[in-house]
Image 1 (cartoon, one colour):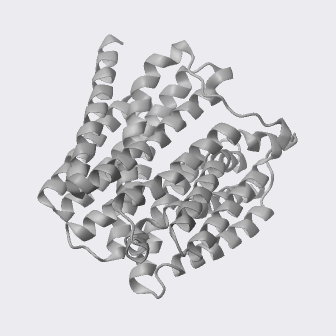
Image 2: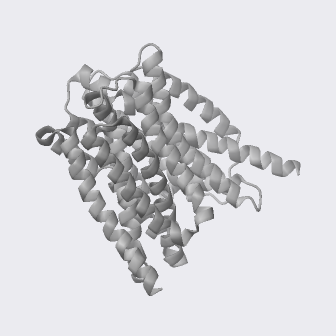
Image 3: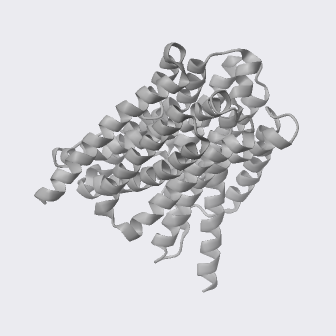
Length: 394
């Protein structure tokens, strides 16, 4: 009994470390407007700065996504915390746009190192028979951490001093504390190998997975794209179109999307894996419709509703997509297939977001957002239609 209690304590502590790292990746979200005023760059630059993070995550997933299987979980997670600390230092020292690019690149490296390794680490530290509860811890740590980042930065920027410095100083302290905690946790990889044995993971798509992968990848792409737009340009929309200049409120709106995603992922246990992906597509479509209404009528309540509904849809769709793809994959190629799904998903928070930035100048932020919503709605409708036809056939 004492052994189980000790293992649960370690599981929860590893989840807290996971949350701290992920919070750093969304910390700059409510601050982009201040950086625009300070450095004088356009909305397109905001989206490119944001998208650099996604490119870094994809690079790590492909090149070193399986590194923790060889060298151990703790060394990889310590490296991730090191990148998170270096990212915070870049933002603290920012005197120009180059610092922001460097900070986002390092933030993406930290997320890429943590995403797979920390999830597995949380599950491995849990006692035997605690997989379901440990999955909840990992999910809550990941998405909850992403939600806490903009909330923390928004509150500090609005109600404390030095809005462009204090959030990153606080995060540095949290990262240092997380490193101290991590050093006291057990290593779960028994047979470790040198880093030189790690080989890049090649995305793989066996023939029997392709029918499932199409709609799963499309829904994941749209869900991540929706989050990408929320975390990159929604603070600007709130300030410019709705005259909302309270950064704590801007951070809260973004945080709600991530918290709702956590709820959507947890609801998969009740909804069922097979129904979660089509239901998630419906939720994403409803979230996009609400966001279109918010842009058209310039209504804050619709922005909040779109964050909640779209977030739940993203959570349902992504966990359903992961489960469906993993179940359809051969055991010896499962890791490669899941890596391919993550690459497509993270593509959703890069290419469409930059597209919004490109269109923001000629069409305005509202017009660019409506074009984005129309494109994403077409994609998710195609995915939902395929799933419905497949369900009837089954």
